[in-house]
Length: 60
Image (cartoon, rainbow, N blue to C red; front, side):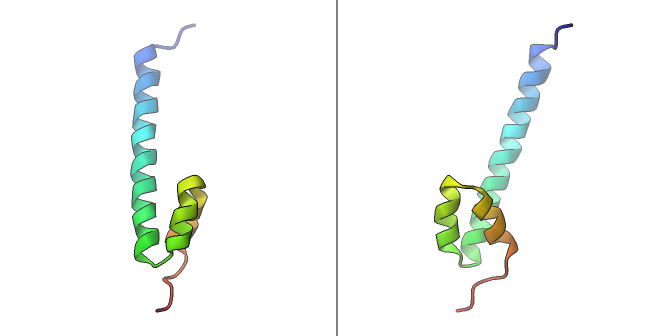
């Protein structure tokens, strides 16, 4: 049984777009909360962007 190529390609493209939008928005949230070190590390390990977006803002 063959899977249509167009359906699987479309789903991969949509998931890639969602992944990119999430990474950009989480990266911006991390920077706005003052966690710039987590942002830099998050370029290589995106898990740090999720953590930086969830934890409270840094004290000034």
